[in-house]
Image (cartoon, rainbow, N blue to C red; front, side, top):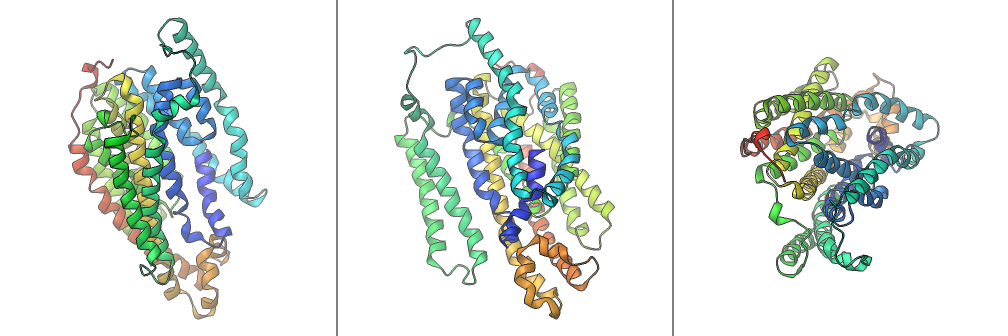
Length: 452
């Protein structure tokens, strides 16, 4: 529910600053930080245990909570059952997706979008307390049974643990990605384009920081930020990036609650199919990727102002079912090839690739949007409204203030249609890379795998 409500409110937040075109940009930094923080979180869960790790990241946000939940499911389920359990964990979306839109509208009309975010700062800790107590109960039971090994040196200081989290590596890789991605958005916002030296300098410095990160990891770091020894297969890593790049390209300026329901229902069906057949690769290769390409590709034609809404719904259902299939299969491909003790690290790497892909996708979306939408809006707006171009371009609220059917509203809709068409073309091309990525997976029979 939090994702649905805050996702609907985000365009209004950027519009309040007359910067609606930067809606996709807001997720670049959060995606990078949310994904990269999972690697030190994996180390934290190993060092202090899942209950304490859950509590420590209680205040970090959704990424920490969802990641801890995935680890809990992986530790408490057999490999064959894991797909169904992961799908079941996301099933609440089937209910909350119907509530997110009305709640967001009510918040906007009454207390304002600020409290739309503030509400969840209060609700989230209360709702997640039962999971925390469950983790604590399991921890104490395991400790009582002698299944948990305490450090030989007894209680240790926080400083003694810091090298294990490779803070220097985290800072280097985060700064490197940010300095590469953000200038790509900044150039589209400036009339000079690539001419300002700071744009080129930021990209060069970002690239150099990533090189320094690689050298640091190879020759200096005692504990590696990236667990290279358990790095998931290239096909799995590639699909994580492809899926989230494509999704964030076309979805950054397009919202649909159908995706949540379709993905959750589809993932449950996929979980049952994987449990019954003990295989997952065939679902991704023969259904997930082709249907995802079909759904996004058809949106190129149907995501236009005069298109029949039923066609858009059909595309969304295809995308949702394919997405639910690929997310579950991709997670299974990641965890099925490693030992149980490496699952936390593997899921962290998987989450990192997904989040980096999301950040790249949001960056591409912002660049395409800023390059197409204002140009087309300027072209289509009637002469009587040309003087209002800046306020119309910068605010979703102003755009919606024009009556449906008016010349200005039709011009805005046409500009939206043209911008979305370009976004969808790029997203479809990226999705095509999912074909070789899934073909490269190992065709594992889950019930024959014994994880220790």
